[in-house]
Image (tube, rainbow, N blue to C red; front, side, top):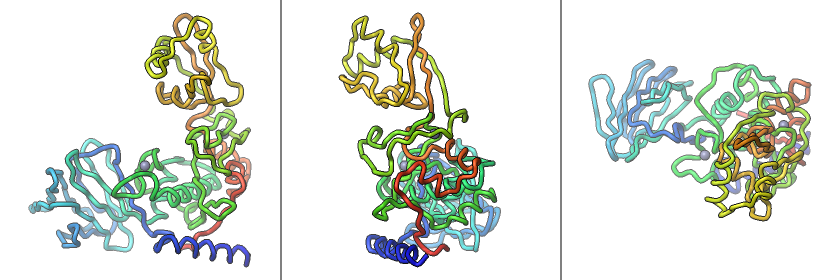
Length: 382
Ligand SMILES: [Zn+2]
Ligand SMILES: [Zn+2]
């Protein structure tokens, strides 16, 4: 216990050295990231909000159930409430001013969503952009809800909370976004707003501050996917970068789960015109039949190794669920039988769900999918 405490203190101080506010209390998430609505209505559903301009000047206060309408006008925002409209240059902040604050967002063309804490709205030529400045642990709860849904085993929710937290803290400055830390899509982690689901909130609270570190005590890149199809993929086969904790794992737990198999059909000529267009490849009859009979018992990485035609290219070109597939053909059709769902690196969510149902604890599940890692607490909890 003492050793763990000392390690925690050391880890904490090392991290404080590189960043003054670590772990951060809040995180900035770019929401509606792939949409740029031109107008939005916001209604506090708990607490109350203060609306300010970028310099902190107060525009108005918004009580429970009062609404404000914001529209994009070039580099200005038109902000309307009651019978007043003001025009702002630059961004606007909505800041919660009660103990618990959350609000409903009705963005044009998007079903309404509910978010915790604060919001920053920025005008832009293509429409509005939004940043949810949210308490880290509330964000984690929202991610667990968006990434894993309802009615999961408590240990699985704990695992998902820990890896979502680890992923967020490790990637918040490095995922290539400007003006916020992480986006709300699968590029970073799915986050479609707050959750009030008590089983998720319990798991987040129970594991608060808990993260996964490697042998050197550094946060791991805690990537995950829906189903590995029976074996995970070492990271270097997907992103070039090898990591000692992202190696291939044979996974008996995800078999028979919803994402474990899939099939689809494409025209053979679609495949061959893709190969011709992207690789200048015009195979002769025997090469064609070899390609059309491509199969993998265990995972491989190339459809045509000597031309560097990777299965990753094929997966993204034809929007396939995974790279773990086998071809068969009839007439001019190509039948694709696949296993797994997602990139296959790191933790397999459906396997982890099954391990949780079988009684494995969160640290056992995490150590099964990530090698030579341990759980640690970044801080004493808050
Ligand atoms: Zn992102
Ligand atoms: Zn699996």
